[in-house]
Length: 117
Image 1 (tube, rainbow, N blue to C red):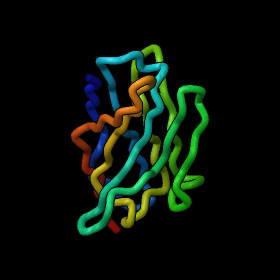
Image 2: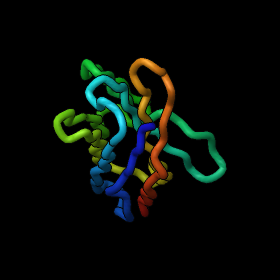
Image 3: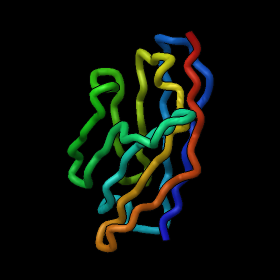
Image 4: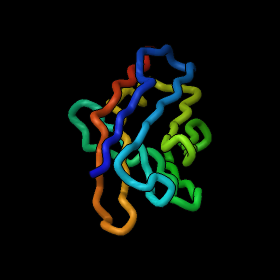
């Protein structure tokens, strides 16, 4: 069983920055693929960024050049640095773990990000 806890959300003005953090427990973190998703009111949950256990990253087109995903395997953490935030980035952001071996998905409880114009 993997547990994920996100932090770092909040209210920020357009153009500002936030750094989200997600700490994982319950598995060998370095083996797992990790990702950040977001869900805005009335919309489907969407992939924002992912990072493989080898460190390969992917990004949604809407955040390329503004967001950076990274991981610290020694601390069992994954981060999402968000710069040049826009009102359309407002959403609940979720951390997801794809557990190595089982292939099961685990989700955190989410953290709210609100960008004011």
